[in-house]
Length: 301
Image (tube, rainbow, N blue to C red; front, side, top):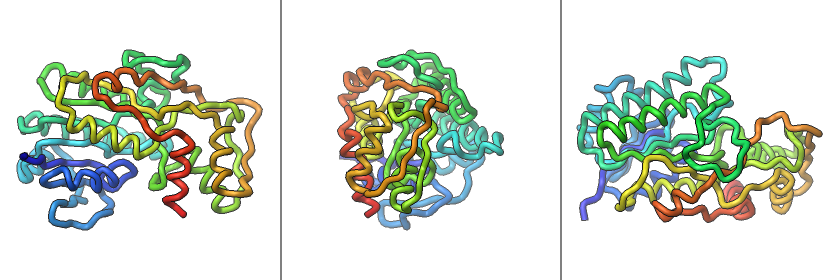
C-alpha cells in the first residue's frame, strides 16, 4: 500500500502536535509547519519553522516533498488572541489559507485537504440541533476570518473539483491548550489555588469537544474513501453546564474557588447537529465531559 506524504500546518499546536504523533505510522512522510519546534526531525518527520508568505513558497514545499494530503490547523487560534492587531489575524488566517489552497490547486496532486474551521464562524447559536446550513454571522474578527476561509474553500471544492473537507469545530479543550478557555481556566486556577469568577450563571452551557476527539475526527476524514460533502459540524457528545464542569473538576482537584455571576455576559451557543458527520464519515465523539476532564487532568498530573 502506498502511503501519503502529509503536510500539517500548526504542527506544534493543540491539535497539530498529537496529529503528527498519531499519523507517523500511517504516512510515508509528514512535513510540519509551525514557528514552534515541538518534535525534532526524525526519519519520517520534517519540521519547517520558517514563514511561508506566498503561493510560490507553498508550491515549492508541496512539490519538494511530493505532498498528497494537507491538514490545515494553523493560524491565529481563537478570538482572545491578537485583538489589538487585526491585520495579523487576517494575514495569518485568510491570506495564509488562500496561499495554501491555491498552491494545492496548482499542485494537482492533493487528494484530500482538511480545513479546521470553527463554531465561531456561526456566531451566536441560539437554536439547538442546527445543521451545517445554519447562516454564518460571526461576532468577532476571528470568527469572520474562519467564515471567510470556509466560504472561499467551498468555492474551490465546487468550482475546481478539489477534495476538501471543512470541519466546524466546537471549543476544543485539552491539556496542551496554551490559550485561554474556561475549562482550562478553572483547572489552572484550582492547581494554583486561586479564586476565579466566571462571567455567567452556573447553569450556562457550552459546546465543548475534547482534543482527542478532534484528532480522531481529522484522521477519520483524512482517510475516508467514500463520497462526502464539504462541511461538517464537530462537537463533543454532551452539552455540559458550567456547574457540571466545576463539579467534575472538583473530583480531581480539591478546594476549587469558583464564583459565578447572576447574569450571562457571554453570547449563547447551543449544541449543533452531528447527524451529517455520523452518517457520511461514520465518526462520532467518544469523550464525554467527565472522561475528557479526567484525561485532561491525568495528563498534567
